[in-house]
Length: 300
Length: 310
Image (cartoon, rainbow over all chains, first blue to last red; front, top):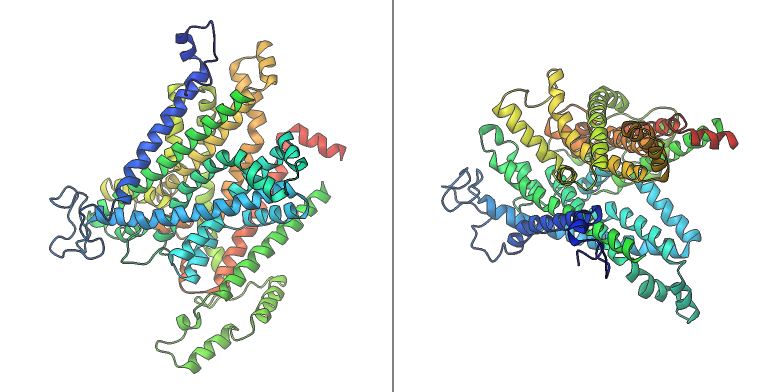
C-alpha cells in the first residue's frame, strides 16, 4: 500500500534505489506522521473514553485529607488539587466533556460546511454570492472576541459552546468543498448522470460528494484539533462549562493561582493532555493529507 | 490607483459597520441587566431604573442603535459605564501596550519563521525536515495559555529571570512575546515552506539553475521574491489579528492591553466600552490589511503592470 506511488508493475530500477528516492521517502514520512499521530491521539482518547469504567476517584468530590499531593503519590498517579480531587480522574472526566464538545462541533461545522460549500460550488449564481459573502463577512470578525462575547452573554452551556465553535469553524470545510465541487462539476460523469435524468440534488449527494468526501473529511478531522484548543481557551477565560465539572481549560484556569505556591502539576499536566491530543490529530490529518495528495498524483 | 483606494476604504467602513452592528445586536440580545453592576448594592427597582435611564438602556433597542450610529458619525464613541469617561479614551490608554506587544511579536516571528521555512523547503524530504515539520505541528498544537504558564513557571517562578506579571519594566515583554511567537512561527514557517516548495519546483527556477545561477541567489532572489506576497499577507493578517487583542496572552501575563480590558468589560457588561474596543481594534486591523495591500505593487512588478494597463 505504502509502495503504491513508487512501485509500478515492472521496473529495471533496483528496489534499494527506489527506496531512497524522494517519493519513497515522502511516502515513508507520511506514514511515520500518521503512526505517531495515531499513537498520540490514542494515548489520550482511549483512557478518556474509558474514564467511567476505570477505577478512578470521584472527579468532583475530593478527599479532604489528601489535598495538594504531588504526582506519583500512592493512589493518585498525577497528584491532587487543594480540594483533594484526583487530577488524573479530573483530566479524564474533563476530557469527556472537551472531546464531546469538539466532536459535536466538527460534526455540525462539517455538515454545514459541506452542504453550503457544495451548494455554492454546484449552483453558482446567487447561491454562491450569498454564501461567499457570508464567508467573507465572518472572516472580518475578530473570532475569539466574538466567541467570548456570545458565551459570556448567553451562558456557558455545552450546547452554546458547541454551536459557537461550529459556527466559528464552518468556513474552512465550506471553502474547500466549494473549490472541489467547482472542479468536479465539469467532469464528464456529472454530465452523464444529468443526461440519465438524475436530479441535481441527487447528483450532488450521490455522485459529487462521495468523490470529494475523503479530502473534506481530512480537513474536518484537523478542525477537531482547533475545536479542542478553542474549547480549552474559552474554559480558560471562564466562558466554559461551569465548575465543579472539570474541563481541560477549566482545570488549568483553576490551577493558575496555585503554581506560585509550587503546585506546578495542576497547570502543566492537563496542558500536556491537550497538547498531546491536538498534536496527534494534527499529525494524523497531515499524514492523511500527504497520502491523499500522493494517491491523486498517481492516478491522474 | 486612487479609485481602488477609495473602493477599499469604502469596504473598510462597511466591514467596520457590520462588525459594530453584530456586536451591538449581540449585546442587546443577551439576557441579564448591566444596570445591576452599576447600581448601589441591593438596589431598589427605582435605583435600577435610574441607572438604566442614565445609560439610555430604557430606550427601545432600535432607538439606541440609531442614536449610537448618529454619535459614531460625529466621532463620539460613547461613555464607559464603569470608568465614567470617554470609552475611546480608555481604549486609547490601553492600546499602546497591545501594539507594542504585537509589533515585537510579529518582528520576531518574521525573523525566525522566514529562515526556518526557507530551510525546510530547501531540505525537502530529509530527516531534518521531518523533524522540523513535526516540531512546527507541535508548536501549533499547544494551547497558548498553557505555553504562557509553563514559561512563567520556568522563567519567572523557578529561575526568577523575569517578573511574573504585569508591565513593570521593558523585560516584562519577553515572556508574553515568546508565547505568541512560538505559535506564530509554527504557522508562518509552514506557509513559507509551502510557497517556497512551489516556487523552487517551478520551471523558471530550473531554467535559471541551468543558466548557472547560484543556489543562494535562486533561493532568495528568485523563489523567495515570488513567495513574498503570500508571506507578507499572512504576516499582515496575523498582525491584524493580534491587534484585535491577544486576549489570552494578555490575561495570562496580566498585560495591560486591550484584550485584558475587553475581558473585564465583558464581565461587567460595560456595553460602550466593549463596542469601543471592538470598533477601534477592528478599524486598526482593517487599516493594517489595507496597508499590506498597498505594498503589493512594491513587491511584485506584475501587479504594477496590471495596474498600469487598467
